Length: 314
Image 1 (cartoon, one colour):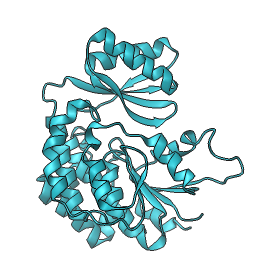
Image 2: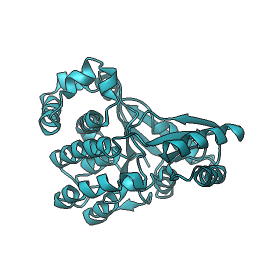
Image 3: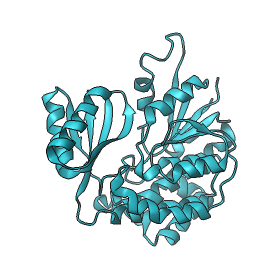
């Protein structure tokens, strides 16, 4: 199958200057930046094109800005490929929905701008955090989570199942720090992430409730191609199913391993990542380790700039 699955990255994939070359070459792309600035009330181009490092990591600005970059890349690539599906990691799921025509670009910008603000404000005292636990399998991470939660008396859970050896925990900062120490004791690594809260955990419940009315108000259309949802990793084929999944996405784990494996099981052998830098494409092979047949030729491509877009071909 030469049809690609589209992959759209989320937070952590931002880059200085992202999306500038495409916006300066296309009035449509530039207009999407301006629309995102009007909706968010933030000087997004100034933040990302003038390399304001501190502001770049602020989820209020990051969520609408990254959505603009992802959507503009797809807008330019759309005439060249016929996708067999799409998926986005956390924030990136909204770009996947826009690409499939489930939500309009305007709806997606409104949702991600509000989502970014709500997630930034969900933990004003900074009690929550996240950490990537590396080189440890899922059963060992589950042991660490259970031990760290019990010993600290605080909430902790696995929030992102990125690859079999890269899982992210989320919860109270004390429990997250304890999990990192326990990972090291087991010959793994624990890296605390620079985030403003415990994303994809019950600590986002209030933000999730505040986002729900806007999600329900949006017009959800039948996707032009299947969209694989974070909450369960399965493809959805109607707007209502996508909406129901997104209503719980902010407080549910991202099941990326299942997502990639389900894509493979449905015939995918080609993944096209559309975002500022390679993130999700690197996860494809690890997710399929022990699953993919050796004779299968797996192809992963990245389109991140106008230059790479121009060079891209099937």
